[in-house]
Image 1 (cartoon, one colour):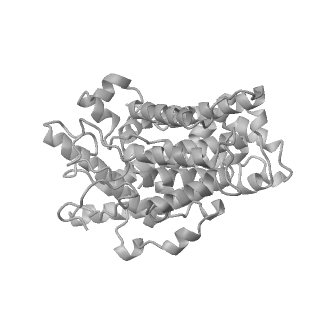
Image 2 (cartoon, helix red, strand yellow; image 1 turned 90 degrees about the vertical axis):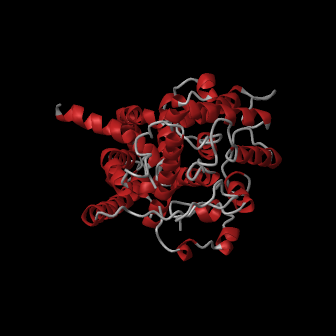
Image 3 (cartoon, helix red, strand yellow; image 1 turned 90 degrees about the horizontal axis):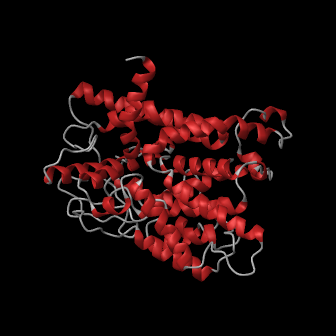
Length: 424
């Protein structure tokens, strides 16, 4: 097997881990205490960024609504094309949020606890998408497209069952027969978000709109649908190839708008965005949908690039969710999916392998196109990767497995299970 084929084999092996990874905090509970005062005071959209703690700002229904208002209702917020009223936006928020708490027939929720795919995760991805736009990515999209992408981030995993697409196919769940096997849950999520937008008269074409307004709404809806579909991890390599293919064009177009020659050749940065540079008018709708989807994909798996306390805590969430799936598969007499067997899988080993073969290249491409945001995630990732390697070495030398401590979200944050014996 030549090196190219071998690397491709390894990439496919770790594609499943990509769905798992990102992600655990083994610190004391005191390090996860919620600062209610800071949540209450964070009414400005400027309060949220890469370092924001989703477990804090998603602690309650009220705190979640506070963040949503900061993003879509309050002064200085994102402006959704068509300017929907606050009442419509709030009704949309409530119904979308409810979709993250749904339990599905055919899934045993005495075993499946939905540790990771919670509304807290959705809020985290929304805020990280915003941070990537603010750190430079916003120069590639129009105002309406940026707003729609952040909205898509909030809805990208709505109706998620708490098990993987491959599990639903394996057990021939009714959703598999309804939707088919390709991007099964991503298509359900996208369809549901668009239906809710229609129901609440958000991003819908109305009488009296001119062609320009209609085009903005069409592009916004298309971006929402495409960006959610692109979160399917099986399309990861396809997306990287396509974004790599347009990266030179993006940077070349950006260079024509810059005055500082020192920035030539660099991806978009915070200074570009804050100075008002915007190249959305010189990009095709297809290129904008692709770069927007890339931003959401990076936000969706951004936990390896966050501060260690967040990186490790989220890793615990995602690994526990997939170990729960493995437990259910064993209960059903099925073979656990890759990396879902809690008795054989090394958590640090998964993180190291996935980081080496998937995340590093993803963040390098992000840095190439969005210099500031990509640099931040890549630098943290390199630090975190060394810590995972150290933990893996300790595991190997001691013969004792790494011990995860589970710090799930609150009930309002989407936690649906109960702690098992020995957890925390």
